[in-house]
Length: 88
Image 1: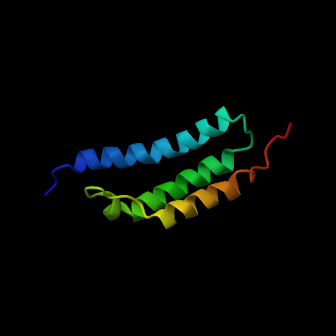
Image 2: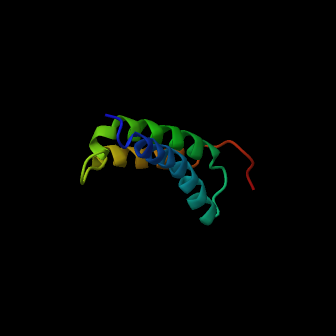
């Protein structure tokens, strides 16, 4: 009954940690500043999206629906300049 539970939890946790890290790293590579809101909200939304579509992901050839991924990208685009931090 619990076969693979540890691996599933480890993979899920890695996804939830890696998405905000990749968002942050990508913005740093592009020399963008003011991306704190994008990383924080984007990471939380990713945890929600991937958690909601767990049954879709957890099968052979499974993936998150394209419309959900497109909505995630649009949200990230809207949040990209939302930080009110220091401006150069």
